[in-house]
Amino acid sequence: DEGASNLYNEAGLKEESTLVKEIDDNCEKIYKSIRNQALEGSQYGDVRPLSAVCTSSVPSGLDVAVGRMPKIIATGGWSGGIKIWNGGEDHYSNSTGRNTNASDAAPLDLLGAKNIVHEDRIMGIAMKPYITSITSTEPLTMVASASIDLSAKLCTVKLNEEANVGDSMDVENLNTKDNKLRYNIEECAHLKGHAARLCSVAFHPTGKFVATTSFDHTWRLWDVETSSMAEGKELLLQDGHAREVYGVG
Image 1 (cartoon, rainbow, N blue to C red):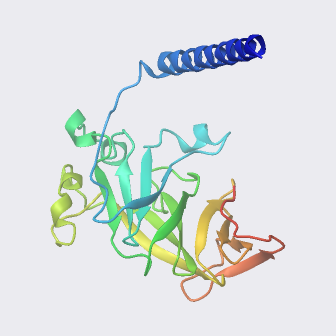
Image 2 (image 1 turned 135 degrees about the vertical axis):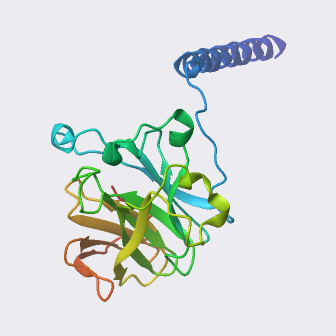
């Protein structure tokens, strides 16, 4: 009847009002948490869409031993290449003793690039935790990438002592011999074995192992130290999933 219909409408309006207030309260909380944040950098990443990004990290307990480490960002995209970007630190004075101004250490400056790592799109990317200092002769870190070309690759990120302050800004001439970016990206291992496109990749906290997932319903664990470009050392093949395996961590 009409009375019941009115009661139903009033209940619906009250429920809607409560929902709207809850949304408004949540929006206000989000606004308060981000109102002091600001965009520090923006960069044209690649000629094709970017599909994966990761940032550098230092394992818990090693920050004192490793010392002050510059933040770096790694990206991968549909072009199959990997690039290293400035995460907002001075990447020159740590090892050379030179003082640079803010423009020399701008966030998202391009610091390293390898235009062709995979034959097809990169779908996942991960960075090995820092284990050495920036002044070490050993690789600063390692980047793992997973692609739809059925494989994953490991690339070392090494300091380029011939790099000059400001070279990171010359994005248009990456392939010229005179352009020396701060870091060299070198392939060191090719992980092959999945029967379908890969989805993601992740390092073990120790940096000694790397895991990959795939559309072939499996995830695999690889040994970082004994894998090479000729052969990836597979330690574990885990099946049992009914569908594609998208993530690992």
